[in-house]
Length: 227
Image (cartoon, rainbow, N blue to C red; front, side):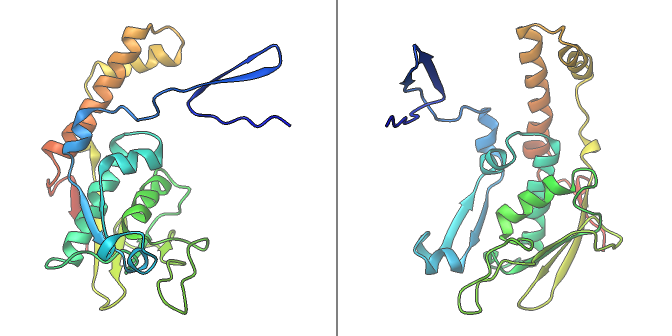
């Protein structure tokens, strides 16, 4: 029996024998990710199970990128949207992860609702029918994430303990993409772009994300109340 242990991202097959090569696995990402606003929450389930001292968890934008697998205006907007909702719901205390219901007016399959919902789940713990069912009737995360509810705003966040709620929307169009980016994307999709052009597109794309997260983190025209 052959047991293969993958220690990195690369493997080669030579004459039927599997060779593995150790490669650095640390994710390299734009430096502004570390300057984006963080979100600290208290998760009583994490505390109960010994996963986090005092239940304190600090999430960083790169956590959302790892979850989504990419960084874009939608991921950045969802990060700021959820952060703002938690700020409004818990103005004088740490947000309680697992203590918030998250609802979306549109169905999950419409537009980018599914992406936004995934980031909201990361920060709030709210999950759909497949979520954690709890322990002894406590700490359930199941059915706290709903879509297709149908209300005037885009997203509604509700505290389970006192019923206070906020409805928010977001408009990433307030931070436009550099005009040079779309022609480059067209060349990439057509298979005509070279390595330098592809790299430049990525730089311009993340330049917009940086502006959203750093320059407009608290912009009331980017993330706004709708209730």
